[in-house]
Length: 198
Image (cartoon, rainbow, N blue to C red; front, top):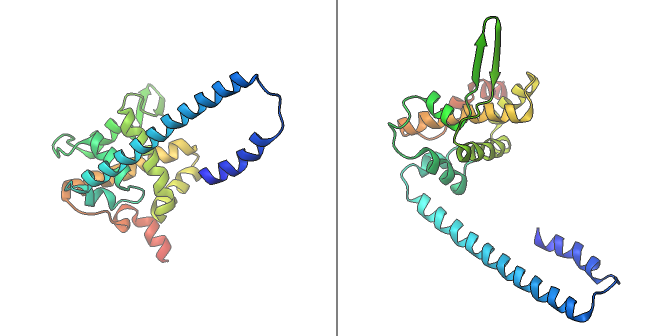
């Protein structure tokens, strides 16, 4: 969105305003040029890192499975893989992976009271990647969107509904990684696919 920002800022910068002494304005210009050089270097570094991650991730045996999921491209898929690892025995069940990611809720019960809360102890990097994954899946999967909408209708707030969707997708990912199969929308969200067909 750089061109639109430039088009918006240029008229503002060209308006007549009060000035600093010429030496101070020249110093500001030098400082701004140096900052732009740093920004260019950071952008170039980010582009190089993105290309390296995409190239290396593409060679991993699980890349095909991860990128078959809606909302997971090479970069988000690499983030998820980096956090869960590729050791299939690391998580004994899908529930343990969900708890590690912070997608599984915590139920606290005492006497007649029962409270379901979001998990606070989790892998924060995986939880952040999962938030982005679930958000992206909303626009690329009818089943994911239907699941999210159903949770919102049931009374969940946006974050809780999205965390529940991440929980569902993580369970599907665990199954696919254990069996070596790709994502299948009709298996992941059978009710949504059946409703769409009807």
